[in-house]
Length: 273
Image (cartoon, helix red, strand yellow):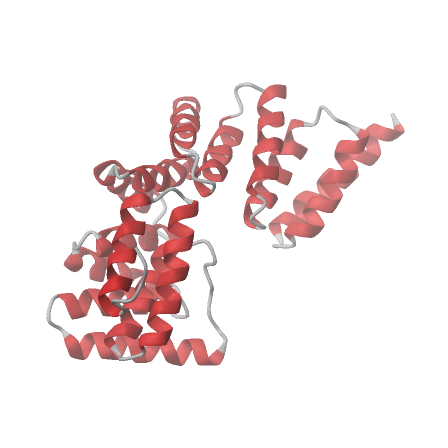
């Protein structure tokens, strides 16, 4: 009885910390909750979600698999495991998880995000666009528009990318990567003035430190690298593109990886194949 009460307390505090953005604190409390009650599927679920945010994808998959073992109809656990699997490049398994999550709960939006990401990594761009478009309609926030727009931008659908990236910066003016990618799209349609204004704004935001960094986002580093190339910063461009290629390879995003490598060789002919 005492263990159950203590476990509930740790779980409740862990949920509060997760909601407040203290993900490591949430993990620490769920560690204690699970020690006291190893059959608490919610504890495994939220600890797994916190591990995704802290980039511990293997640990997240273990937790979410345990949540599914306890409750085989937990749509949220399947969707979150799909997101974690996509982050590790286990793309078909991610798609399978998200498909099942959608069967169980068509309203759980993270399933569409995870499936869209995995579809993009495998080269199923129509499927990815369908998922990200659906997500942006159901959840019209900066993240949804950004995911849709970045895919549109590197696919060369520049007008739509510009439109959606404008929504991103309207909702979150400090999202400097969105300015870089929108600037590249403007450049591609011949609006060099608009491109330079976006590049300038992106650099201004970066200089203030009031920005969000996406360490796992190959499209972000590609966008900034391409902008730096166009601004004449060859060294910075190559550094960003190398990072983009590294992340893309981790995600098994092979087509995008090849595109980035081709761009690097264009900038630096001595770049090894």
